Length: 370
Image 1: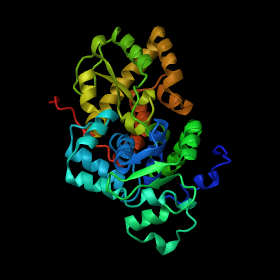
Image 2: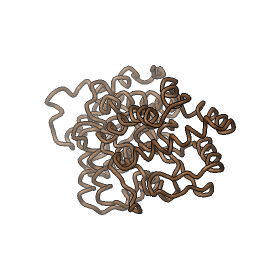
Image 3: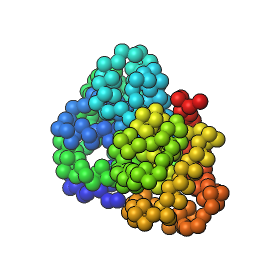
């Protein structure tokens, strides 16, 4: 991706900001600057930028279990906040997280926030700094700020060092450039982040969908399909063994959406709203629940091939929720016996399930089960 040209600024250096990146800090620091500048601010404290970084990383770490880098301080800080404050949900609203960060008096959290400011505010602009070489970087923060403030045509400069209250002042030419080209710059930054995070999480699917808070799933077609089945036969949900009814049906991702980042039909199961909420982002215990899932899916498979109206509804769902023709043939072709059906389903779901386990998704068993 090419960044827009500017006669006033050296955009070639901007394009090199993320060369040889081994930690995630610079991505989140620049993203925070873009957010604040496009909100109309050019004087920014360390603290408000660090808080923005934490909220941006929150969902990646707590909801999607992404690895942000080896011994990553931002990732460990998010983990610490969640550990100390379990009332903050993984899918918490950004405003709630921001309010918590503004008001917390936890000394360990504040100390770790301060740690995040030790390098990234200074190293971020290193491609633009011709005067600072080698060991000249290895000085105290006050001296380093003084040296950086003598450099020419940087994106931002510093006020005097004052802990998390230290300010950067984004220069007018950069404010204008970022504001004018914000969509392109965001797209370029997102592309760079995807490449970095995918490298750190090679087995995780759907990285592009995991840079932002989780969105509401569009599962109305699947829900309608199962409601039509319920009008013909009783269906038992797989976690609490309850008989489903049309007024209290919810569609669950067997392997959580937070890992798979898709709504493929073979991973979707009808349950109740309360059980789905209880399961949250956890992996159902494989030994207890996979066979139940397979039998429930096989029940719908049999009904689908038996009733034309259900088959027509299946076809509507398939166009949106089965995106692999090989999987569609293997699992949904006609005249399968249960053992073959369950075997095909297992070969598709089990590797995804095991990969999610390896990424830290916890095992879950419904508490109301005998």
